[in-house]
Length: 133
Image 1: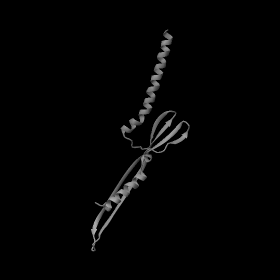
Image 2: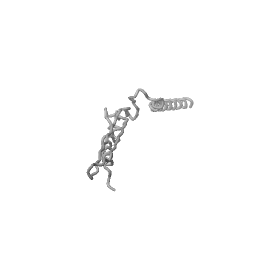
Image 3: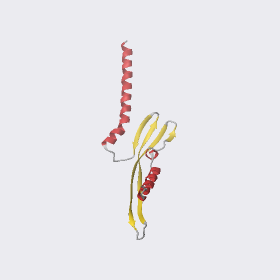
Image 4: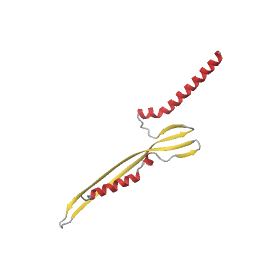
């Protein structure tokens, strides 16, 4: 069975969407600020498309087809990953972050504080052991 013209319209639309939005659109290319700091942009991509057509019988023996397709893409920067001196932190751009987003954003700082506290406690116990001997 021959391909219907609406299939060609949909195929062309999907191909154009693939050209506009790929993985590099969502997680952008790293931006090297200096030898210790790199910034990676993160974006939200929203897309939609529609396609349709109609076979119209003509007064002559040929069949006619009328159709069209369209697509839209919205790319919104939402955050940056900042890699500095081996540590990674998220800088979110949206003010309307949910409590879950806030918890995820606070997690790296919490881990850093816990590691610092454990190191501090470890040093104190070493000092205590030395003074007891």
